[in-house]
Length: 229
Image (tube, rainbow, N blue to C red; front, side, top):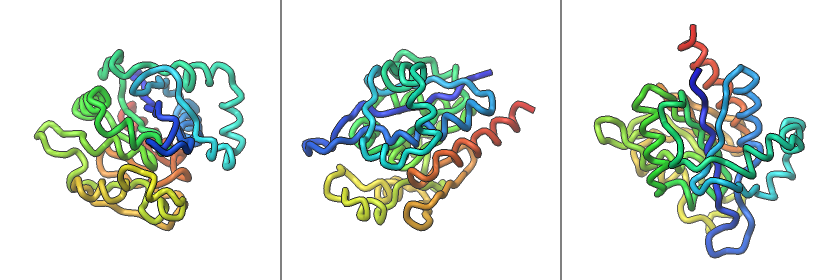
């Protein structure tokens, strides 16, 4: 069985602003818990490989699933301390790619050539492209086999401009996720701020915010199980 690839950020702070960021922990743990419970294997990778910083704010919202995995030494080792480098991976090993969020991704996802390459190859080989929250930034530059933006005319979601404003980070980010997804041709949809919301369009599954990774995982598992029947 092919594996699922989880992508995480290496960025520890908001650009030149010395405010800590990184991975939003629950966007890894809740998705991971769903897919491995369904029997799927997972690899963790990041643009630079190795250490993945965690946004300290995410611990304020940690629940039993987050602590279950964060207190697991083996999980911390392969999911947070020693992630694989994207350039070392074979896209054909994966049936899906999942881009986690946290504000750090806005700096290292969009223009990373290796990340673009592996996402395109997984999708164009029949795999699924999935994301949650700011992780949708990785979708912006992906192209389909017709050399059009992958998200063009696709139903898609990600962290909203309203959520960014409520989070008091509008002036700290290099771009607004909702604005860019729309600018790249996506049919952007959203629900109320900080409420679970996931949308699927073919082999693209996206979640709006940190409340949505579990459902992204659930929907992906449902689709993969159909293929394995």
